[in-house]
Image (cartoon, rainbow, N blue to C red; front, side, top):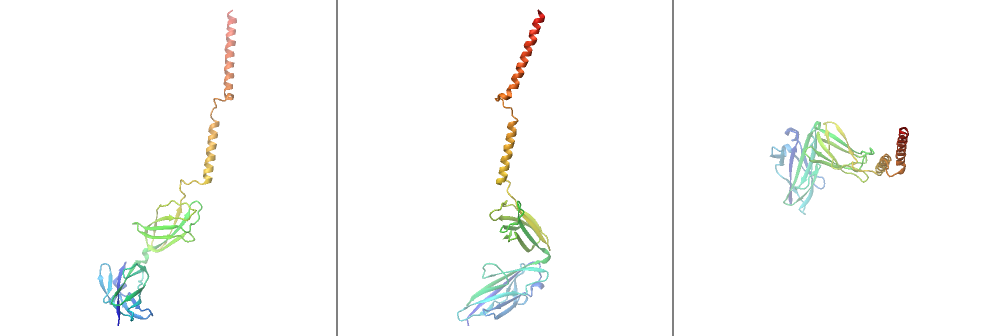
Length: 280
């Protein structure tokens, strides 16, 4: 009979005790859905890293294979929920990419051991909250669908990069309470946005924090209407200033001055003539 093996490792993170997680169970089935075996963390596993709560099967599971010497099997974690907590379950197969979920598909080949590694990240329910982000255009007050928003933790780690839905919103559920940095990275054509601006928001445990990310029109952006108004204002100011300046080359402005001078000279001549007559 041809044989292969499956080994399961388990890592536990979060505020849970041995009493909480010892009942975690793994069920192995063949391609036809027939149960190969059921394995309990507190009975069939050994501790390989106590500080990091890492466990491994005491003995790899022996798998009987067909004459081809290979087969596809599933490993599924059950009974992983613990009262008062939320949990995110992920796994890898043979050191591949980490995937979300509790059910892993495993290819087993003759005389080889396939490795399935699970990780459970537990968090207290009361330490979690929600963040509702709404992207709004400042000028129109309308919500903006299709905007890409980046959310970072306080230490700068990217938590999520998501796109707003048709209502211009993004909802992050069950995230740890604390501070987050929100940045609108890109927006659809037709919208103005000050890119790269980070807004800080605080998520409170047990509640939903609503945050409006405003697309601010850049100060150096001038619309056609604004430009026309600016030109009209400048023209009016120029005309007013021009009208207040005396035009020294214009004879209509110097005529009153000439008339006044002639009248003054005539007065002087008249007075001088009278003095001569009196002296005689």
